[in-house]
Length: 171
Image (cartoon, rainbow, N blue to C red; front, top):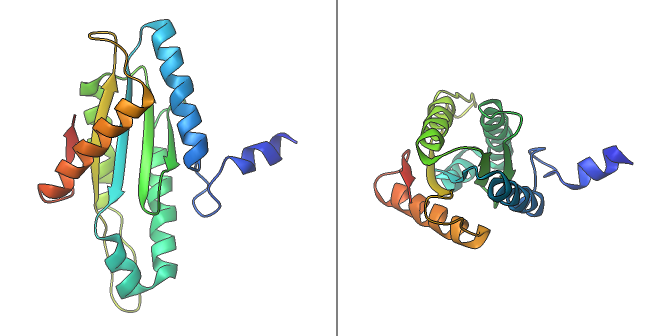
């Protein structure tokens, strides 16, 4: 029964949380952060030029990239953090007890790890990059709800994309 519940929270392709599960995890993390007076940071991440990968190398290669990127992000996180597939090639990362400065370090570590990935294909080898936007909820001003955090992280992600991609911006 536990295995079935676990599988129902996972994205079938990447085996990380699906959108609903990562949103629930974020809400729980925010409640815990308020209770413990600890910051919570979220990172909205999007693979750069992913449509080109699918169009040039095929959807099979796109799936391989998504799986590898999901694994790479997960490997950079602590056990108390989590990542979910928010959209097609978009990821939401939730970092409990993490202030903005620490979230930047995590995001940069993820960005470098993904840029180091190499994929072989008969049409040629490829590398991928990722852009990220960060938002933090802490008790300096007041805790933000999940909608504000998501909007701010998404806006920061937009700025990272607009400024040339393969970047990290903070709200």
